[in-house]
Length: 301
Ligand code: AVI
Image 1 (cartoon, rainbow, N blue to C red):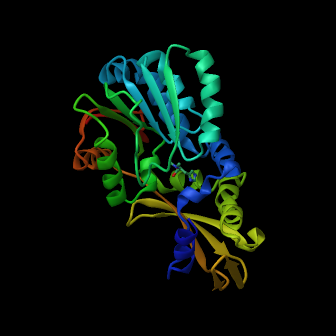
Image 2: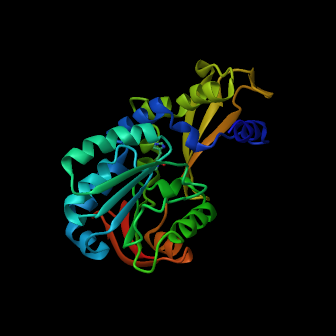
Protein backbone atom coordinates (compact mmCIF):
# COMPACT_ATOMS: atom_id res chain seq x y z
CA UNK A 1 0.00 0.00 0.00
CA UNK A 2 2.81 2.37 0.95
CA UNK A 3 4.72 1.51 -2.25
CA UNK A 4 1.56 2.13 -4.34
CA UNK A 5 0.88 5.49 -2.66
CA UNK A 6 4.49 6.56 -2.93
CA UNK A 7 4.70 5.66 -6.64
CA UNK A 8 1.50 7.61 -7.34
CA UNK A 9 2.65 10.70 -5.46
CA UNK A 10 6.04 10.68 -7.20
CA UNK A 11 4.63 10.11 -10.71
CA UNK A 12 5.02 12.92 -13.25
CA UNK A 13 1.26 13.45 -12.97
CA UNK A 14 0.72 12.83 -9.27
CA UNK A 15 -2.20 10.54 -8.47
CA UNK A 16 -3.79 8.69 -5.57
CA UNK A 17 -5.91 5.62 -6.32
CA UNK A 18 -9.65 6.24 -5.75
CA UNK A 19 -9.80 3.21 -3.46
CA UNK A 20 -8.11 5.40 -0.81
CA UNK A 21 -11.17 7.69 -0.81
CA UNK A 22 -12.97 5.07 1.31
CA UNK A 23 -11.75 5.17 4.90
CA UNK A 24 -14.60 5.08 7.49
CA UNK A 25 -15.22 8.85 7.11
CA UNK A 26 -14.89 8.66 3.31
CA UNK A 27 -17.52 5.90 3.20
CA UNK A 28 -19.88 8.05 5.26
CA UNK A 29 -19.24 11.06 3.02
CA UNK A 30 -19.98 8.90 -0.02
CA UNK A 31 -23.27 7.84 1.58
CA UNK A 32 -24.05 11.55 2.05
CA UNK A 33 -23.17 12.24 -1.61
CA UNK A 34 -25.78 9.65 -2.61
CA UNK A 35 -28.43 11.78 -0.83
CA UNK A 36 -27.53 15.00 -2.64
CA UNK A 37 -29.94 16.46 -5.20
CA UNK A 38 -27.03 17.02 -7.61
CA UNK A 39 -25.86 13.38 -7.44
CA UNK A 40 -28.50 11.82 -9.70
CA UNK A 41 -26.98 8.29 -10.19
CA UNK A 42 -28.19 6.74 -6.91
CA UNK A 43 -31.81 7.82 -7.13
CA UNK A 44 -32.00 7.24 -10.88
CA UNK A 45 -30.70 3.70 -10.54
CA UNK A 46 -33.08 3.07 -7.61
CA UNK A 47 -35.98 4.27 -9.78
CA UNK A 48 -34.96 1.81 -12.53
CA UNK A 49 -34.79 -1.05 -9.98
CA UNK A 50 -38.19 0.00 -8.65
CA UNK A 51 -39.85 0.28 -12.03
CA UNK A 52 -38.38 -2.84 -13.63
CA UNK A 53 -37.88 -5.03 -10.55
CA UNK A 54 -40.17 -7.80 -11.80
CA UNK A 55 -38.44 -7.89 -15.21
CA UNK A 56 -35.03 -7.90 -13.54
CA UNK A 57 -36.09 -10.83 -11.33
CA UNK A 58 -37.34 -12.71 -14.40
CA UNK A 59 -34.02 -12.18 -16.20
CA UNK A 60 -31.94 -13.21 -13.17
CA UNK A 61 -34.07 -16.26 -12.40
CA UNK A 62 -35.05 -17.52 -8.93
CA UNK A 63 -32.77 -18.71 -6.14
CA UNK A 64 -29.52 -17.13 -7.32
CA UNK A 65 -26.28 -16.86 -5.38
CA UNK A 66 -26.03 -13.07 -5.22
CA UNK A 67 -22.44 -11.80 -5.10
CA UNK A 68 -22.44 -8.11 -4.22
CA UNK A 69 -19.24 -6.42 -5.40
CA UNK A 70 -18.67 -3.32 -3.26
CA UNK A 71 -21.66 -3.99 -1.02
CA UNK A 72 -21.13 -1.08 1.42
CA UNK A 73 -24.27 -0.87 3.56
CA UNK A 74 -25.89 -3.64 1.43
CA UNK A 75 -28.99 -1.47 0.97
CA UNK A 76 -29.19 -1.85 -2.83
CA UNK A 77 -29.02 -5.64 -2.72
CA UNK A 78 -31.50 -5.75 0.17
CA UNK A 79 -34.00 -3.71 -1.82
CA UNK A 80 -33.94 -6.49 -4.44
CA UNK A 81 -34.14 -9.48 -2.02
CA UNK A 82 -37.98 -9.55 -2.01
CA UNK A 83 -37.91 -9.84 -5.83
CA UNK A 84 -34.79 -11.94 -6.50
CA UNK A 85 -35.16 -14.33 -3.54
CA UNK A 86 -31.47 -15.24 -3.46
CA UNK A 87 -30.56 -18.52 -1.77
CA UNK A 88 -27.22 -17.11 -0.67
CA UNK A 89 -25.94 -13.55 -0.41
CA UNK A 90 -22.20 -12.83 -0.47
CA UNK A 91 -21.31 -9.23 0.41
CA UNK A 92 -17.81 -8.15 -0.59
CA UNK A 93 -16.13 -4.86 0.28
CA UNK A 94 -12.78 -3.56 1.43
CA UNK A 95 -13.93 -3.07 5.03
CA UNK A 96 -15.24 -6.34 6.49
CA UNK A 97 -16.10 -4.59 9.77
CA UNK A 98 -18.59 -2.27 8.05
CA UNK A 99 -20.08 -5.27 6.19
CA UNK A 100 -20.54 -7.30 9.36
CA UNK A 101 -22.57 -4.47 10.90
CA UNK A 102 -24.77 -4.27 7.80
CA UNK A 103 -25.23 -8.05 7.62
CA UNK A 104 -26.20 -8.47 11.25
CA UNK A 105 -29.14 -6.10 10.63
CA UNK A 106 -30.06 -7.84 7.35
CA UNK A 107 -29.98 -11.34 8.86
CA UNK A 108 -32.83 -10.32 11.17
CA UNK A 109 -34.94 -9.10 8.25
CA UNK A 110 -34.15 -12.01 5.92
CA UNK A 111 -33.38 -15.01 8.17
CA UNK A 112 -33.89 -17.55 5.33
CA UNK A 113 -31.03 -16.11 3.20
CA UNK A 114 -27.57 -17.48 3.97
CA UNK A 115 -25.25 -14.48 4.22
CA UNK A 116 -21.47 -14.18 4.09
CA UNK A 117 -19.24 -11.10 4.43
CA UNK A 118 -15.89 -11.01 2.62
CA UNK A 119 -13.37 -8.21 3.22
CA UNK A 120 -11.48 -8.02 -0.04
CA UNK A 121 -10.09 -5.53 -2.54
CA UNK A 122 -11.95 -7.30 -5.36
CA UNK A 123 -10.83 -4.68 -7.91
CA UNK A 124 -7.51 -6.47 -8.33
CA UNK A 125 -8.48 -10.05 -7.39
CA UNK A 126 -11.72 -11.89 -6.69
CA UNK A 127 -11.37 -14.93 -4.43
CA UNK A 128 -14.52 -16.75 -3.39
CA UNK A 129 -14.31 -19.35 -0.61
CA UNK A 130 -15.54 -22.92 -1.22
CA UNK A 131 -18.64 -22.19 0.90
CA UNK A 132 -19.98 -19.93 -1.88
CA UNK A 133 -22.42 -21.96 -3.94
CA UNK A 134 -21.79 -22.29 -7.67
CA UNK A 135 -25.51 -22.36 -8.43
CA UNK A 136 -26.72 -19.44 -10.56
CA UNK A 137 -24.11 -16.98 -9.42
CA UNK A 138 -25.33 -13.44 -10.02
CA UNK A 139 -22.60 -10.81 -9.84
CA UNK A 140 -24.24 -7.62 -8.60
CA UNK A 141 -22.30 -4.47 -9.44
CA UNK A 142 -24.57 -1.43 -9.10
CA UNK A 143 -23.85 2.29 -8.71
CA UNK A 144 -21.71 2.68 -11.85
CA UNK A 145 -18.58 1.74 -9.91
CA UNK A 146 -17.43 0.23 -13.20
CA UNK A 147 -17.02 3.87 -14.31
CA UNK A 148 -14.14 4.30 -11.87
CA UNK A 149 -12.00 1.94 -14.00
CA UNK A 150 -10.53 2.93 -17.37
CA UNK A 151 -12.34 1.02 -20.17
CA UNK A 152 -9.35 -1.38 -20.39
CA UNK A 153 -9.36 -1.83 -16.62
CA UNK A 154 -13.13 -2.36 -16.69
CA UNK A 155 -12.82 -5.13 -19.30
CA UNK A 156 -10.04 -6.84 -17.34
CA UNK A 157 -12.10 -6.61 -14.13
CA UNK A 158 -15.27 -7.93 -15.81
CA UNK A 159 -13.36 -10.84 -17.38
CA UNK A 160 -11.95 -11.80 -13.98
CA UNK A 161 -15.39 -11.58 -12.39
CA UNK A 162 -16.95 -13.64 -15.21
CA UNK A 163 -14.38 -16.38 -14.60
CA UNK A 164 -16.00 -16.87 -11.18
CA UNK A 165 -19.35 -17.81 -12.80
CA UNK A 166 -20.47 -21.13 -14.27
CA UNK A 167 -22.56 -21.16 -17.46
CA UNK A 168 -25.76 -20.48 -15.53
CA UNK A 169 -24.20 -17.32 -14.01
CA UNK A 170 -24.89 -13.70 -14.81
CA UNK A 171 -24.23 -10.06 -14.08
CA UNK A 172 -26.56 -7.27 -12.96
CA UNK A 173 -24.74 -3.98 -13.36
CA UNK A 174 -25.56 -0.27 -13.14
CA UNK A 175 -23.78 2.03 -15.59
CA UNK A 176 -23.99 5.82 -15.71
CA UNK A 177 -24.71 7.18 -19.18
CA UNK A 178 -23.38 10.20 -21.03
CA UNK A 179 -25.54 13.30 -20.60
CA UNK A 180 -25.30 17.09 -20.69
CA UNK A 181 -22.08 18.39 -19.21
CA UNK A 182 -23.64 20.81 -16.69
CA UNK A 183 -25.57 17.97 -15.05
CA UNK A 184 -22.40 15.88 -14.91
CA UNK A 185 -20.23 18.70 -13.54
CA UNK A 186 -22.74 19.62 -10.79
CA UNK A 187 -23.03 15.99 -9.69
CA UNK A 188 -19.32 16.05 -8.84
CA UNK A 189 -19.17 19.59 -7.39
CA UNK A 190 -22.25 20.01 -5.22
CA UNK A 191 -23.33 23.24 -3.56
CA UNK A 192 -22.85 21.91 -0.01
CA UNK A 193 -19.28 20.87 -0.69
CA UNK A 194 -19.85 17.24 0.34
CA UNK A 195 -17.98 15.93 -2.73
CA UNK A 196 -15.18 18.40 -1.97
CA UNK A 197 -14.94 16.99 1.59
CA UNK A 198 -15.01 13.43 0.19
CA UNK A 199 -12.13 14.24 -2.16
CA UNK A 200 -10.07 16.20 0.43
CA UNK A 201 -10.54 13.43 3.00
CA UNK A 202 -8.25 11.23 0.89
CA UNK A 203 -5.38 13.39 2.16
CA UNK A 204 -6.27 12.61 5.80
CA UNK A 205 -6.42 8.94 4.88
CA UNK A 206 -3.01 9.09 3.18
CA UNK A 207 -1.61 10.91 6.24
CA UNK A 208 -2.83 8.01 8.40
CA UNK A 209 -1.72 5.24 6.02
CA UNK A 210 1.65 6.57 4.92
CA UNK A 211 2.61 8.90 7.77
CA UNK A 212 2.29 11.80 5.32
CA UNK A 213 2.00 15.45 6.39
CA UNK A 214 -0.56 16.80 3.91
CA UNK A 215 -2.16 20.00 5.21
CA UNK A 216 -5.75 19.53 4.00
CA UNK A 217 -6.34 23.32 4.13
CA UNK A 218 -3.65 23.79 1.49
CA UNK A 219 -5.72 22.00 -1.18
CA UNK A 220 -9.00 22.47 -3.04
CA UNK A 221 -11.38 20.09 -4.79
CA UNK A 222 -11.40 20.40 -8.57
CA UNK A 223 -13.69 18.34 -10.83
CA UNK A 224 -14.43 18.69 -14.54
CA UNK A 225 -15.80 16.72 -17.48
CA UNK A 226 -13.08 15.58 -19.89
CA UNK A 227 -15.05 15.30 -23.12
CA UNK A 228 -12.30 13.54 -25.11
CA UNK A 229 -12.13 10.74 -22.54
CA UNK A 230 -15.85 10.86 -21.69
CA UNK A 231 -15.12 11.03 -17.98
CA UNK A 232 -15.43 13.24 -14.95
CA UNK A 233 -12.02 13.78 -13.41
CA UNK A 234 -11.53 14.64 -9.76
CA UNK A 235 -8.31 16.32 -8.69
CA UNK A 236 -6.91 18.10 -5.66
CA UNK A 237 -5.23 21.41 -6.46
CA UNK A 238 -2.48 22.99 -4.32
CA UNK A 239 -3.47 26.45 -3.06
CA UNK A 240 0.14 27.42 -2.28
CA UNK A 241 3.65 26.05 -2.82
CA UNK A 242 4.49 23.29 -0.34
CA UNK A 243 6.58 20.20 0.28
CA UNK A 244 4.81 17.06 1.44
CA UNK A 245 6.68 14.19 3.10
CA UNK A 246 5.64 10.63 3.83
CA UNK A 247 7.35 7.47 5.04
CA UNK A 248 10.08 6.97 2.46
CA UNK A 249 9.53 10.00 0.21
CA UNK A 250 8.66 13.65 -0.33
CA UNK A 251 7.54 15.95 -3.14
CA UNK A 252 7.30 19.67 -3.67
CA UNK A 253 4.12 21.06 -5.20
CA UNK A 254 3.79 24.52 -6.79
CA UNK A 255 0.58 26.54 -6.45
CA UNK A 256 -1.92 25.11 -8.94
CA UNK A 257 -0.29 21.66 -9.12
CA UNK A 258 -2.80 18.83 -9.05
CA UNK A 259 -3.15 15.32 -7.71
CA UNK A 260 -5.55 13.18 -9.77
CA UNK A 261 -7.81 11.21 -7.43
CA UNK A 262 -10.63 9.70 -9.53
CA UNK A 263 -12.06 9.14 -13.00
CA UNK A 264 -15.73 8.44 -13.50
CA UNK A 265 -16.40 7.30 -17.06
CA UNK A 266 -19.77 7.98 -18.69
CA UNK A 267 -20.84 5.61 -21.46
CA UNK A 268 -23.30 5.74 -24.32
CA UNK A 269 -25.85 2.92 -23.99
CA UNK A 270 -24.34 1.00 -26.93
CA UNK A 271 -20.81 1.40 -25.53
CA UNK A 272 -21.97 0.10 -22.14
CA UNK A 273 -23.35 -3.04 -23.78
CA UNK A 274 -20.16 -3.28 -25.88
CA UNK A 275 -18.02 -3.16 -22.76
CA UNK A 276 -19.86 -6.18 -21.32
CA UNK A 277 -19.74 -8.13 -24.58
CA UNK A 278 -16.01 -7.45 -25.03
CA UNK A 279 -15.59 -8.97 -21.57
CA UNK A 280 -17.36 -12.18 -22.58
CA UNK A 281 -20.86 -11.41 -21.23
CA UNK A 282 -24.02 -11.51 -23.34
CA UNK A 283 -26.40 -8.67 -22.51
CA UNK A 284 -30.00 -9.89 -22.25
CA UNK A 285 -31.76 -6.70 -21.12
CA UNK A 286 -31.02 -3.00 -20.78
CA UNK A 287 -33.36 -0.95 -18.60
CA UNK A 288 -33.09 2.84 -18.29
CA UNK A 289 -34.97 5.78 -16.79
CA UNK A 290 -37.09 7.83 -19.25
CA UNK A 291 -34.26 10.39 -19.79
CA UNK A 292 -31.71 7.60 -20.39
CA UNK A 293 -29.40 8.97 -17.71
CA UNK A 294 -28.58 5.58 -16.20
CA UNK A 295 -28.67 1.97 -17.43
CA UNK A 296 -29.20 -1.25 -15.50
CA UNK A 297 -28.07 -4.21 -17.57
CA UNK A 298 -28.51 -7.94 -17.08
CA UNK A 299 -26.01 -10.12 -18.92
CA UNK A 300 -25.37 -13.85 -19.10
CA UNK A 301 -21.89 -15.10 -18.25
C1 AVI B 1 -18.40 5.06 -6.46
N1 AVI B 1 -18.45 5.83 -7.70
C2 AVI B 1 -19.31 5.17 -8.69
C3 AVI B 1 -18.76 7.25 -7.53
C4 AVI B 1 -18.77 7.95 -8.92
O1 AVI B 1 -19.78 8.58 -9.21
O2 AVI B 1 -17.82 7.82 -9.68
C5 AVI B 1 -17.75 7.95 -6.64
C6 AVI B 1 -17.95 9.42 -6.53
N2 AVI B 1 -17.03 10.32 -6.71
C7 AVI B 1 -17.53 11.50 -6.52
N3 AVI B 1 -18.81 11.41 -6.29
C8 AVI B 1 -19.09 10.09 -6.27
